[in-house]
Length: 242
Ligand SMILES: NC(=O)c1ccc[n+]([C@@H]2O[C@H](COP(=O)([O-])OP(=O)(O)OC[C@H]3O[C@@H](n4cnc5c(N)ncnc54)[C@H](OP(=O)(O)O)[C@@H]3O)[C@@H](O)[C@H]2O)c1
Image (cartoon, rainbow, N blue to C red; front, side, top):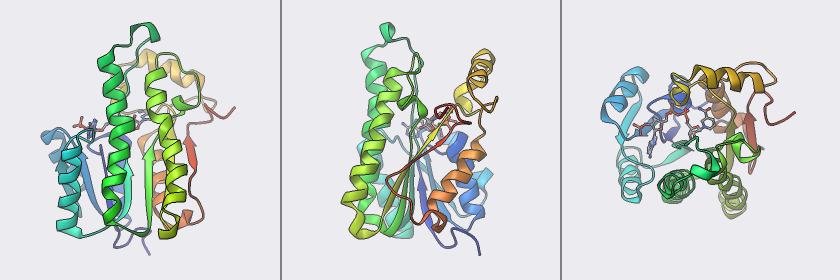
């Protein structure tokens, strides 16, 4: 039996990278998946790459009206949600002294505020015993240069997961955070020097792949993780662990 047979999943920011890899794996495991992103062409390509059992939704996760439209669409098409994966996020690599207000607001608006309201607005559609997953980062636990704002904007997700676990426990809803280390996605395209540097900092000696996040998300989405909630799983080759 497939691990997500007949489940409905919503994955934000899923036209590339680790969330797209997750959407593909969820569909292979029997789920119907809604994916989101802001660019129509990339969204169409992602829907085509997934192939079946997928709806593409054009929207910005930092925009609350777009989030309302997203969940209206999910309600109209499928009525409920079994798995919500709030993955849309943005990182600016900027030294402390050069951070602008615009960059600060952009990161907090999507990572902290957008993630908060994505989950809040999904609540009426979430089935009892649903699984909520959010994408954090190990930059929230390590003092990574140039990532202070990014790390801080994602650190709140760990607090959300803990508070919401208590608030939603009567519904049996589980909430967990995946904190990736450096993963080879579009975020690192054309940045070979940075990739080499990152790999040198990781005990396993390499960057991670999107599929290694997807298998972790599948674990958290499925009954395989039925006794895990309020937790963080770091998928980082040991970078923030040793
Ligand atoms: N790559 C890493 O090393 C790493 C490490 C730790 C954590 N993370 C986190 O992991 C998540 C995914 O990262 P990734 O590297 O896989 O990303 P990616 O390949 O750069 O893709 C980002 C995805 O998010 C979408 N997106 C961006 N802003 C959005 C918005 N405001 N609303 C809706 N969708 C939006 C993008 O599509 P559009 O541009 O079309 O909207 C795209 O589909 C992010 O939360 C990121 O912060 C990444």
